[in-house]
Length: 171
Image (tube, rainbow, N blue to C red; front, top):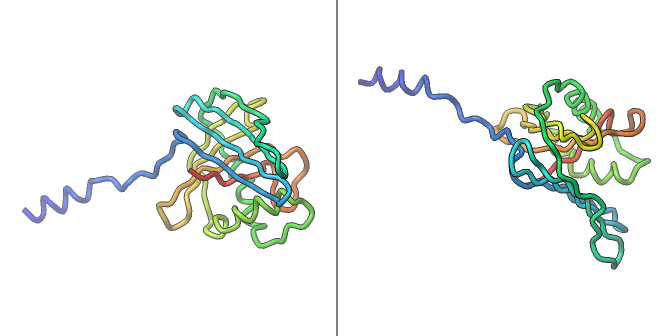
C-alpha cells in the first residue's frame, strides 16, 4: 500500500504558474509633477483594453489613450528576453539622464535583483506587431510570477533599457 501511494505522488505534476494575462494589470508612476497610470485589462488571452491616463498638479485625470487590442501569443521571445537581460545587467547602474527611467527602475530594480525569466509573452498588436508586448515573468527560485509590459524604445539602447522599456505591472 505504501508503494502505491508513493508511486501515485510521484506522477502528480508540480503546480503550474499562472501564465496568462486575463484580468487587470496596471503600472503607476509619479515624478512629483505628474502622475501616469498605464492599465491593461484582459477579458481573455485574445482581447485586452490598454489605457493610459495622466494628471498634473491639481488638474483632473485625463485619459490619453484607450484602445481595444487583438492579442496573439508571441512565439519568438528573443527580443523581450534580450531586453530583460539588458535591464538585469544594468540593475545596479544609477540612471541619471531620464526622470521616467529613474521612476520605472525604482519599481523594477527589486524584481531584477531576483533574476527574472520570461515564461510566456503576448503581442498586444498595439500600433504594429511587437510594438507593445506583455510577458509573464517568473522570479528565479520561487513560484512568484508577474506581468511585465514591454513598450518599444524609440531610440538606441539607453541607460536602463534596450529595445523595450519594461514596466512591472501590478494586479
